[in-house]
Each structure stands twice: as structure tokens, then as C-alpha cells.
Image 1 (cartoon, helix red, strand yellow):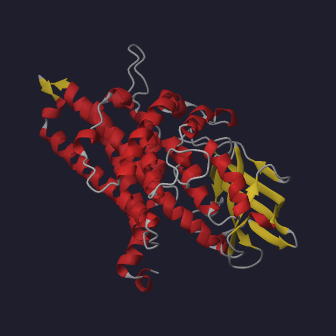
Image 2 (tube, helix red, strand yellow; image 1 turned 45 degrees about the vertical axis):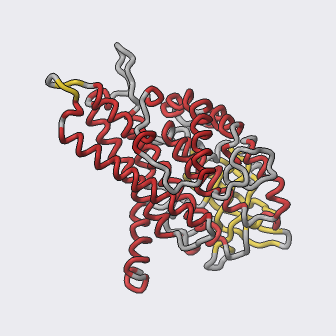
Image 3 (cartoon, one colour; image 1 turned 180 degrees about the vertical axis):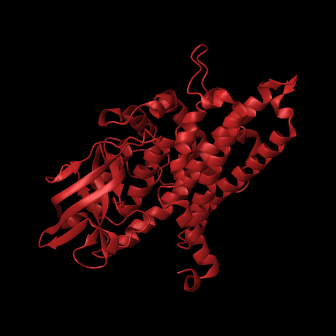
Length: 412
């Protein structure tokens, strides 16, 4: 089990530039995650998705430790993480710590504490005052909905079939959203809609208890089983005007501002998964003997793991740099966010695959029946793949980087 294995990060990583508040937050977050999430992580990773299987105990446990307060300023009823000078960096640091034990719970945290909080910056102060305490406390789960059955990375209004028609009192929403995290238990969702018959989008905050809302059956996925997703169907749902996020027709900007942040968070999650896989691999290389000597005596694995340790340092620095840019108010962080997401999540997949190879059949097994041995690498392998897909597939991230590098007039 990972919690019985030494963290190579503690002796290989030096926090030269990391702010003292983030170093302290990471230490507190690690203790909180080990206390509130780690005991449940294996069961979360193996269960089948259903509305009843949402990991409320871990979810609310992390909230009770103050981790849901990290993105917000002071005045929301908790001290841990509140009013940080670097809230985005802090939130991504917590994401890495969560992903070390459970990638799917890092996905849940990303939705609750990165995507939705950014959309709430566009809400009225009255709505923020009412809902942020619900989010921070974990009493209410929140969702973020942009994807549809026929559109995901392409969020242009022309592709969107979920429509928000304006009325004298607000909006009427009709349509369907897909792959929506937390939808089966959420109280509210930030949803991107086409603005009537126009070619622009509008972002609304929708109360999921509203008449006309139906939540679909939970999706059954290869991995990320704690990150339960299901369709949300809107059938002439009335939304009051005070639930408009930003401006009518300005919804794409709201969504993209959240997704840029979310991509940095997913990059951090990739680093957490990669770090867990590296630690398990190193432990195995030190403890497993073949041909009369430790497996780690083989130069192939020495050089491979040295390269991966270097890449983890690069990936961690990428997400930290991108998050710090946003904390400084620099809106030009999009290429760094794309790099952090694409690099960190690719690395997670590569490292988990190699860790399985190092463990041999034990890495391929869920559990050895006779001995009860389990190293959870099959879970990490199932979980890691989605990191390269959601919140903008890695191919899209490469395109974003290329547009900045070569120029949009060439790349399109």
C-alpha cells in the first residue's frame, strides 16, 4: 500500500521558490488527506458508480479539515487555507496531495474547488454569500457543465444544443449535458448554454432541485469511480436572472477562465499520480531481488526512474508556475496551463505503466487471493487515462501551445 511506502519527494525535492504559506499548507493538507481520505481510498477506487456510492465521508472529511476553503478569502468560517496570497497555487498543491491517494477524488476536488469557484466570481455578491459557505462546508456538492453528447473540447455556441431563452424574469433552459462530475448528488450546477438563437453562449447557475431538471443514471467507467458522472437533462427549466454568471452572451469567457484553472489542477493531479507510482516503483526496486541482487541494481531501471524523477520535477514546476501566474493576476498563463496539463498527465500514464512492469504480475493484479497482497497499480492505471482526456484533451492542449508558438494566423 502507498501509505506504507516512503515518499521520494521528501528527499528529492527542494522548495527553493515555493512560498512559505504553501509549504505549510502542503504539510497540513497531507495530514488531512491521510486522515480523512486515505482510509477510504481503495474502496472508492474499486466500487461501482451509483448515486448511493458517492464518497460523502471522504468528501465531507476533507471539507471539515478546511481544504475546500483554500480557494477563498477570509470571512467564510474557517482558517485553514483561507485568505492565502496564492490561492490557486494552494488549491493545486492540495489537488496533488489528494491525487497521490485517489485520482478520482482529485477530480471531485477540481470540480468543487477550482471550476465552480471560478464561475462564482461572476455571480452576484448575494449569491456568493449564500452559496460559498455551502461549498466550503461540504454540505452541498457543486457541478460544472459544459460538455454535451456531441460537443466537448469544441465549446462554440454553434455546436451547443443546450439553449437558454431569455424571458422577462430570467431564462428558460432546455438541453442535455454529459460527463458531469458530482451531478448525482449536486445541489447546483454552473451550466454553459447557447444564448437563444444567437451564436454566443451564456453561463447560468442552476438549482438542480428546479422543476424540469432530471439527473441521468450514473455512468459506468473504467476508472475514476469516485468521480461519479451522469447526464443532466433540462426540460424548460426556469432560471431567475440573478443566477446569470457574467453577462448574456459572455458565457464562453466564464467557462474558459474556469477551464484554464482546471487544466492546471489536472496537471497537478497528474503529478500526484506520477509521484505515487514512482514511490511504489522505487520501493519495489529496492525490495525485490532477482538473480541474487535487488531489481534496482539493473541499470535500465536506474536510468528510467532517474529520468522519471526529473520529469516529475519538471511537471510540478510547470503547474506551480502556471498557478502562480494566475495568482499574480497574469491572464497570459494559458500556454503554461496547457503545458502543465499535457505534460503532467502524460507523465502519470507513462510512470504508472512502468511501475506495473517493475512489479510484474503483482502490478497487474487487483489482489493476490492467497496472500492478500495488493499494490493498487491496476487502479492507478485505470484512473490515469482519463487525465489525458477531460478538461480539454491533450491534443487540444498541444494546439493551444502551438497557436502561441507559431501564431494563430498559421495554426488557425
